[in-house]
Image 1 (cartoon, rainbow, N blue to C red):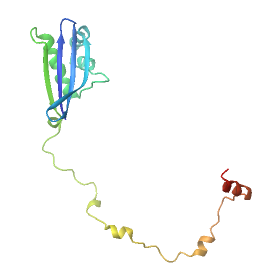
Image 2 (cartoon, rainbow, N blue to C red):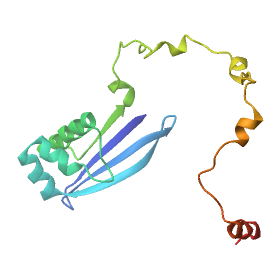
Image 3 (tube, rainbow, N blue to C red):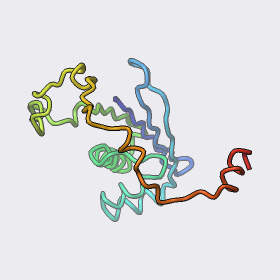
Image 4 (tube, one colour):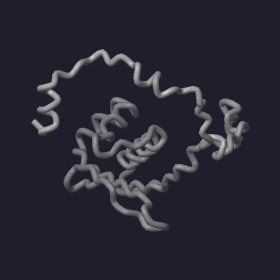
Length: 156
């Protein structure tokens, strides 16, 4: 999935706005989240370091992955260092973060190589040695009282 982050620094209101977009349709980004941060909070986090800034920018509604969060934090720092810039855009594609050059995983067992025909599974191989007398001789450990059986028949 492709994502776009728009980072806006509003000097008039002393706030930072981060908008998260996702590509839900081909080449069409849809706004999925927008977070506004007070400028003093962001500046304080910048002074404490990038990890503090990342922790500040992550919320319960917008929680970018580690790689994205680092790049977002870098751009926020650049915005606050720059006197001219007040916005920037970042694009991410999840395909870029997948490991490259890995082959198909090895099968865990040989069960795939041992195919069983469905007809073999459906065959009735029940031995004919079961006798109806053996079934009748089964001892049932629970006895139902005659009055309880009558109640069960009446639906009570």
